[in-house]
Image 1 (tube, rainbow, N blue to C red):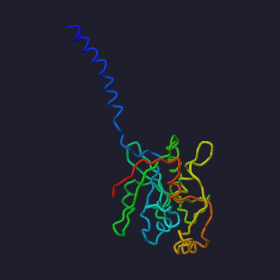
Image 2 (cartoon, rainbow, N blue to C red; image 1 turned 90 degrees about the horizontal axis):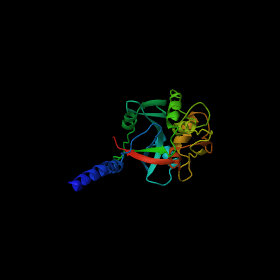
Image 3 (spheres, one colour; image 1 turned 120 degrees about the horizontal axis):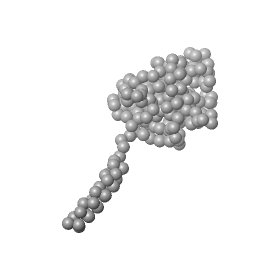
Image 4 (cartoon, helix red, strand yellow; image 1 turned 135 degrees about the horizontal axis):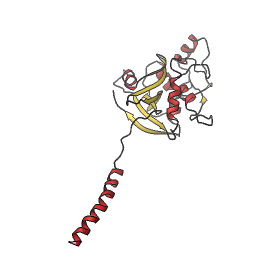
Length: 227
């Protein structure tokens, strides 16, 4: 009888420990968090003459995917997912994530866009960056691709908002390049900046999605497939 009682007491002592170990080994599914960044990519040499392809031609690193747009992600108190980004169509705007995913479609040869969620390795201030982004809603898109002109293109918005407490930026600013891999200036850029009455701002300080995507302080979270 004493042996049976001892066995029961021993089992009761070990049981909570086993349950704790079981819980600790459950893997968490990746999920979007406020302040994450969404990078939109198109296949190499997609081939349409528009800004997306012109950006891809100028910033490609030779990989299979050219990232041509960056958006800031937000998850509200109800769990709904939003993006804040800068586009030609809407300027700086906030809209549901699913709206962006459904509107960003490719039309040639069954090609599909790539949507990759990335996160700052140190994202303690991510919510603050999103709140600051909301203060910029309604700004015009920066067609001139120039710094500090009161307008923003997609990665310029991220660059200006994602600033550390010491005033330094999370992302690098580099000389902008609009030429393709052959060193030629695509007709799209010559035409666009000609209509704006200015030279192509080749070499001006700036950012681009491909360069930002490769930042060493970003970690991959997940790919989205909701098309």
